[in-house]
Image (cartoon, rainbow, N blue to C red):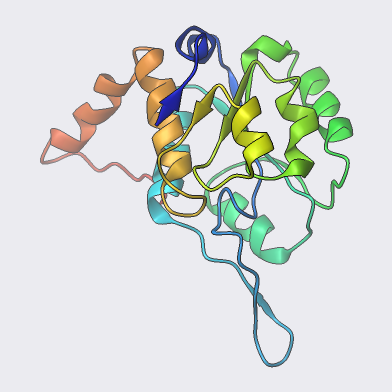
Length: 186
């Protein structure tokens, strides 16, 4: 993981993490079946990371340029209620989230991978990137995962935030208790 000055302090202030989908929550591939159906591979460890973020009191949201039933389904599984699809200009969705949740830029983190993510990354308190993001996005990011999109980058970045906020150790405790039913989504 690459961390620039100020990343730790900014992570401590976060209340909301926003995710792009293609190239962040997935590997960026769009798999098309013979009848035109789309498939998107999501990574279970990223899903558990999002669930742990919720358990720690963080809010999450999705803003994506594409529209697909798969994203709506996955967001439902992970209890991400704020989902904006088909947002080619992501700034409007970002403003809506800020107002709806009464947040300041400093309280928002954004994870992106491509040029379409730059407008929000320039506003968010903690701009983050996946390892295989385009150079311009990695340059704007204060925190860059060591993993590629769809391969654990989201989980790695969430763990950094939860550790920065002093919440990680408490979250782990449930996993060490033999009789505890976690009920956590992946």
